[in-house]
Length: 465
Image 1 (spheres, rainbow, N blue to C red):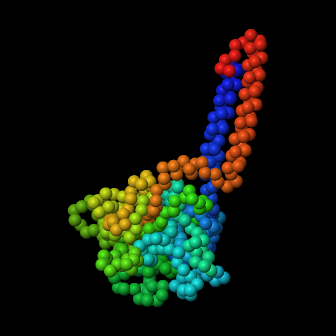
Image 2: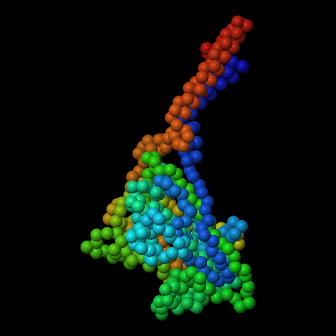
Image 3: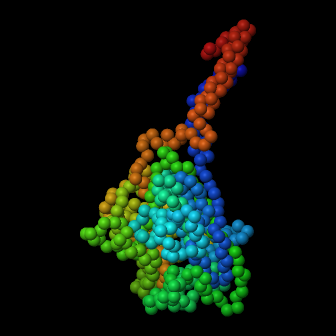
């Protein structure tokens, strides 16, 4: 019995040798994922007040890297997540820019006021000129997946793409509304102008008479109407954001970020020479209530559809929609009606952060199999956004984010990423480990032969040697 056990030990040792490169590679592949948690500059909110600022040169991973995910949420001074029914996260966005070395940008600066020679936008690849962010969500942020599957990543920090004399920096915009004690929580989160007693925008320009609500009425430091007699403390809050990334190398396939908007008024023109000139993305729109038509409540749905000609081609890797309360889902179709990606909201049912009743707390995402969905340059796609129209909604959004890769992994790419050595694990280290393991197995083999030889001398028959 002892001889059989030692034979199995020899077999296990051999298998360990054969599996060693793969084991080390799996460990290296997992270890190369970097994670960092940052806080935005603090902001202070009291009942009914609004935060909507752009913070420049925020903390962000440095170097030539591939972003794998970005998540964020509002937390208090102690780091506790703040529920949406107290502070509504209307949206957050994170974007890239390049600034001339030596030029300081205040966290409260307006990019429109920068010296154009000192500031260059590092926007995404999308067709809406005013939607240049790389990531961005809202109330759904806690339960919406943002991870980018292997072997893909968003490439940033490439020295070849940074203009000479400039450096890459990152900006975060936080739009949060404190709804503690307000007269109408939904009305405040939908930025209804009458609740904010606003008739001009943040630049002092009069609002048009038919503008009932939206971003122009809940800009930074305005106040939504609070119930008479309600008192609440002002508190310090932060946007806590978590970034995951890997070092950029030949095993990573870059993806590009594109954002579509249901309010895009793009029109085909024969003289079109670019992807930006004809796209006017208004970002927000209103939902008019359905009238008594004999339909049940679930029949009151506002559906918007637009056609968009793709100025790019590639393979769809990821997709997700952004909607506000009342949203019932969004989808991207081919012209023949084939669904390429649909994204549906999850509504909360409780009080705790991430499950707040009445709020969208998550959006489903699309992760097609590599190569399953290809977008052809010039192809026409259909974007659809659906909202409940039982009641009037102001300032809703119908954005759709997709990630597109120019190429697919070759047949051996996945295997290659498994056996690729990262960090301190080098090929020489593997060779030395293999040599050491061979030595160990050799010693075991000698010991087994010696034991078997002695066993034979004692009248036992040697088996398998």
